[in-house]
Image 1 (cartoon, rainbow, N blue to C red):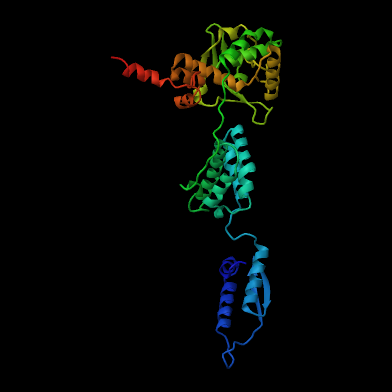
Image 2 (image 1 turned 120 degrees about the vertical axis):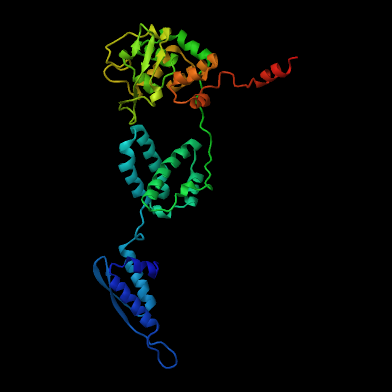
Length: 379
């Protein structure tokens, strides 16, 4: 039941509220019979609710208060000024987020909303969400910590918008009490040197010429799949033996290609063209995509191509595009021990990403003891 204070705040007519208070006060201190007993009195009062006059009849002030509370509750299911999270979050996404971000990023944000945030807070007013509520959300989520952090990122942007709109005084997500834990994401495992040598030796066994060209380019250069799909013949300089990476093709809605800029400015780069790969490339029109012609290949076409390559070569593992990038970058660093060279080949904006994912080398055992022995063991 709503309090009388809330009812007063929601009345459309201040005059009605004032009259209600005056009559209530008058009754509380009203006529008293001899012996101190208060006289019984019937109540018949009118109030204005959303511009309409309604009459409330009761035998006591308590009954009148109950009826008035029910009357307001029937017209207003939420307290005045509350903003339902589901509606507020969707408006934020439609107006401020989706129109200003990449399609693939928008799909990720929408996934966090529909899978986690709206099921957890959909009918809750934004003003009522607490740090406890947020902690319970993350406690109940399964999966990796990386998934939870994506959800946290979207929720934080929504709550910062609510803070900016003056709906909340502080962002409950910023509390130092909040703890987000979870399993670490499993990194992409590189192919072994033996597996790579097997694939290169068996390139000629691949029956489809496009399949052969794809494996030669993808397996021998540190390229993201979207960069390979974005390659046009004009990007390949056979005289200089270089490949220029300047666009990407993504499929945010699976098989609908979207041609765009590379992932970052640092991803625009020129790489040396593998001599092994060059012999499997038969140049076409400058404006055509190397893989697909007038229109780049879809993810479904790439998946089927990888299945054919595995079948034709007799490879003992799945053909997975991202693993080739990881493998090549691992071996670039393993052979050069130069993180700057690996960073440039990867198209990373900073060496931090390169060091974290690729500068691990083939040998996972630390050899620091050999360095110490050589220093301290000498005369």
